[in-house]
Each structure stands twice: as structure tokens, then as C-alpha cells.
Length: 305
Ligand code: ADP
Ligand code: MG
Image (cartoon, rainbow, N blue to C red):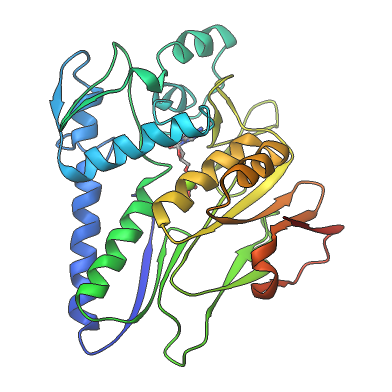
């Protein structure tokens, strides 16, 4: 998944469990990678019009991705890969595509055209999908399942910045997870105490390139325009029981911007969130009140309820 993983687990079988987790995550990667030629996603993306039989990992993620794309009205769009490729994020050969190129690519990104029949998936011509916004969250959930099977009651997983906790620390206290500064200075601007939850952040401060025009172009895209997201949010952190849901929503709410993200929370209320805006304000959902530690001197700290 193009990133690093750290897993601390506590219990007599922790070494064996960690190894099993590593294998499981590798197998998910093999199934959903956009670049490995044997993956189901690769086969789907390179056999336009044909029906591909996929394994359970790919199927679950494609179905979930399609559902969340619908639920967020395309803020998350697992069919955006042609656009992401055009900007060079898949190869590192970055470029700024012309508006005409983007409009023609956007016409191939309609997630409603992903067809799923039992375990057979097919895409419309020229469509390509990418589960990059969901894969780490799902891998984290699978990792925790395995740890539980090995009788582990306390563990902390960091999968490329997606944090997932099993139980509490061994002393019974909650884990404290730092929220990185979205201004790239490496400090933690806040912390949140959790047990049995995932903490997933999306922002534009780690993966971007600087164009010849001196502007920064980030790796999360607005499917309506084909442009990197540029709105009032610096970072959004989602806290939820499912890593997959947290991962999907962190990307989605980042794309939505503050106002729509707050509306989305009000309609759903099945997750908690911390939003840091570019104008240095902090927003958090009310249930986090006891568990949030604010370290940075934000211009405003606002509770959402
Ligand atoms: P990260 O991978 O940095 O933790 P995210 O979970 O937010 O961040 O996922 C970003 C990845 O998702 C991008 O690298 C890209 O592959 C893909 N992506 C970008 N924009 C979107 C979008 N609007 N919907 C779905 N996937 C996207
Ligand atoms: Mg995500």
C-alpha cells in the first residue's frame, strides 16, 4: 500500500499474531492493488467491458466503495482513477492537465456504472477504479480481527497514519493519539483518547507536488472538476469503530469542505470528527469533549452538536 506499518500487540501470542497480520495485509494488497498485474483491480481496469470474477476482499471493497460514493454524492468516488493518473500521482511524473482533458476524463468516472452481480464485477468502457482511499482502513479492520483470534486484547496499529486500537493500553487507560499539524511542521496540534476505535486523517499536507506555477497540487481530488481539492479544510480526522468507514469518510469529508462535512455528520452521527481549517480554527463533535486534548493555540475551538 505504498506505506509503512507499525504494529504493537500485547499477549503471549503476539509475535505469531503480528506475522499473521502481515500476511493478511499483503494478501489484501495483492487483491486490490492498482499496479500489481495479478490483482483483481488491475484486471478490471485493463479489460474494459469484460466481466471479472473477484475475490471476497475486492468484492467487499468495491461494493462498500460504490455505496459510500453514492452516500456522499460522489465526494468519494472510487472511479476517479483516470483523473488521478492524468495528474501523474500514480507514477510521480506530475503534470497539470488541460481543462478539456479533464472534462473528457470525468465522463468516464461515473461510479453508478460499476456493475456488481454476485462476485462478478464489470466497468463501463474506459472506466478504472482505485481503492486507495479505503484500502488501509479495511486492512486495519482485518488486522484487528486476526489479533482478536489470537486472543490479543491490547494492540495499536499504525498503517500509514491510519491508527487503529484494539482494547485499551495494558494498564487499562485509553490510548492517546496525536493529530499532526496540517501545516507540515511535524508537531501534534491535538490529541484524542480512544479505545477500540480507528483514527484516520486526510489532508493535503503530505502528498502533493508543486507546479511550475508555484502552486501546490494535492493527491485528493474533487470528482466534479477533476481538480485537486482546494477548500477551507486543512485536515479532517474521523474517529469510528470501523477503520474502513473512518478511512472512507476522512477522504469524503475533506472533499466536501467544512459546511457540507458538518451537514453530513448531522445527518449520520455514526462517527466523530475533528476538522482543522486553513484559517486555524478547530471543530470537533460533542462526544469527543472529554477525550480531546488541544495543544495548539487555535483562533477558535468550536463544538459541533
Ligand atoms: P492517504 O492515502 O493520504 O491516507 P486518503 O485516504 O484520503 O489519503 O486517500 C487518498 C487516495 O485516494 C489518493 O491517493 C487517491 O488514490 C484516491 N483519491 C483521491 N481523491 C479521491 C476521491 N475524491 N475519491 C476517492 N478516492 C480518491
Ligand atoms: Mg481515506
